[in-house]
Length: 470
Image (cartoon, rainbow, N blue to C red; front, side, top):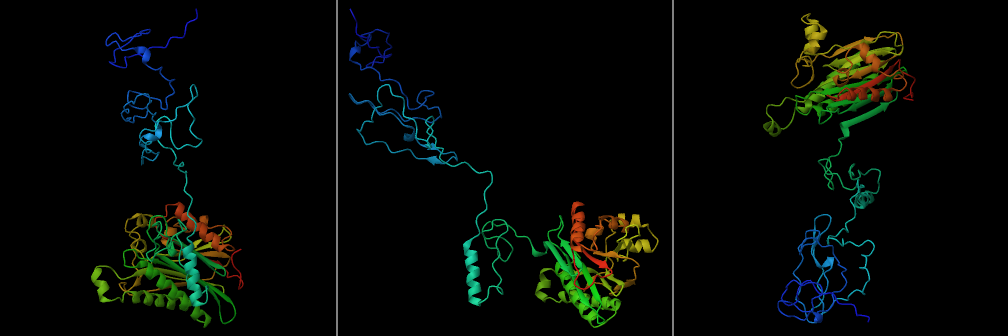
């Protein structure tokens, strides 16, 4: 006779929790009728469970709700529990269904419904993963339209956009304005100073200045120019100044001296003054400009009573009418490098420095003097605290084409001898002076860039008016 399939007995008595054996129809402890126990539904857990009462994610589950007669308890869902997103932010649990509302049971034998594609909830732990992945690089913000709008507004109020200084935009984020102290109002990035790297070309003469790799600012300055003498012949000139770091405001001193000197030179040469005399007078004018910086209010002196007056060195060169004229005070230098590299180069200046004095007095060799820690202590400079001003000038008549290198010690420290300087000057420096000046500054930076670096190049003889770098 066919038999009905027997219903499997539960593992424990529903009444007293006494362990049962397979086939028991009644509880041996309390006599509970096991045939009245409904069959257990198929096991389709919503969560993978670990230890009792704890999910695999280590999250404590809430205690089970009391059973109501004939109504199975609603299953727990992952969203019933508080969790954390991938960034560690606490996420609230979903509100429970209204009291007494049973959850819709899944059809018998059907697999659990898969989470929707892109679901922010992990079915194993209840932890949300809806945060987008972090990019490897964050794109810069687009320029702030308010900056452009402000600039247009300002230009409209003045009637001309060309004569209005537009607001500066940050070089880092390209979104924020730059305040008066040189910092971005949006990202706080410090902006490069205008003098950190400067380049200029004036006809056939060119100059480059760089802050270097160790100094916090550029205390060098230069000025270049070209003009026509009364007889119609061209003249080119360059002035290079190096601020004395131990003095106050050395950057202002070098800038004031270079500008004053080049203005005086241009005016004197156009009037027909001999180049050597014009250069001597220009150095005196530059010295007066630096002296004027010391004439500050007494209140400013109260804050820094022990600081020296602004000071700098100066070196300059003029190429005109077949003459090469140099002038200097301090330890910046002028080198002569022939286009024909088989001809000897030369240094055309003598330093106003402790080392030069030791060599001139015969007390030390040049190698010994410049190896001493006092070698770069200068004995001549421009400034109110300087000794009696003694500008040095000299004129030369080279018999061949070449390049005049006017530079601060930020360059010649890495190519001190004339032969060393000639080796690093590019072969086409006479026709591409700006390119050559960049190469020389790069040589100093590659060597360590311990100081500000400034160099100006003048071809000799001066090319016809209007000629410049190729």
